[in-house]
Length: 415
Image 1 (cartoon, rainbow, N blue to C red):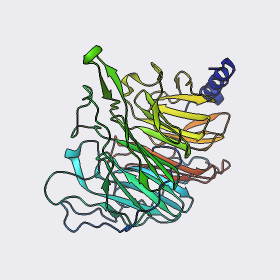
Image 2: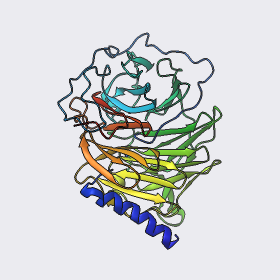
Image 3: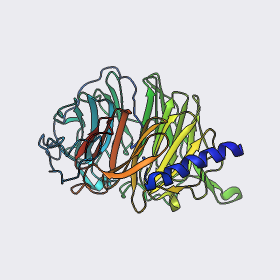
Image 4: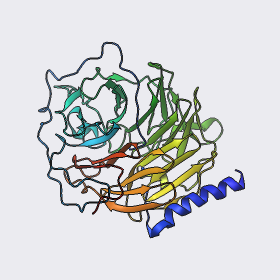
């Protein structure tokens, strides 16, 4: 790496840590977009379910949080249901949240149908079911679904059980399985399906012509122009000689992917980084030895506002890639907290959120915060917080209970 670029990248991180005496900085993710609807898209509704479909009544009452500059007060009309795992906004008048199914990473805790709800700038819709819970037989409901939306509106939901569904926020195609990836040797650190956090996915789509998906078992999936390409599998070599084997990049927790263009995506799975160049995925030859939490045990999130700038949050730390493929050493931004999400619509505006509902705001030179804007989840703790910013003038943050707040781009709103 050019020493001048390294110095510049480190300077960015130093500014993040030291500016204003504040520490701060994560789909979920950068602004999400998604592929076009598949032919024959239809709304899926359960004809027979093992549980009662989600209620249209909000499930929680938000705790009092002081008003933060630019952010709404606690909203009294909460989205219906609960167990929200992902949020995507394409404007200040359309946001979509998804959840339901399994509230945690363990399929044995499946709670019912997978649902999505949409917000029109004023009110939330009733839940629409995209994945009916089975009446009998094996548990197949979604696990920790993640969401990406773009104008149209067009949205895609991918979940840890390996299913994908497209829709407009209300009407959804029947969920279909992702293509089968090339097999990898068993990973000794992978507990297998049915264990907490055993299956998670991340999705991002910079345009309707491309959608990228990665999971926490070393697989990358790419949809180009409505067609899924052959998936790729990645892993670390263990053993020697004839006993050597590639095992999947298992990450006990959420993973992240961000695509500033259709020919540039970066994904993070544990301490490994995967890159998409417009034709295929590759694994970076030398992931940082200690850039993230030991073993990559904490959830990670990534935002790449441009092709030459990416930021990854993990635990209370951040690492930055600025100008080339080298990453800075990790820096602590939110001491003692878990950074769950980061969204960067441009290189001069980012919002990161931690598990307590506090946000950190980046203006291109400094971070401010952490500042509480929503309460920590109480009914669905442990799922995490989502944030989505389609522009520097609008953001939404939501916890798993459905407590949410919006940012209007005004830093002059009195507290």
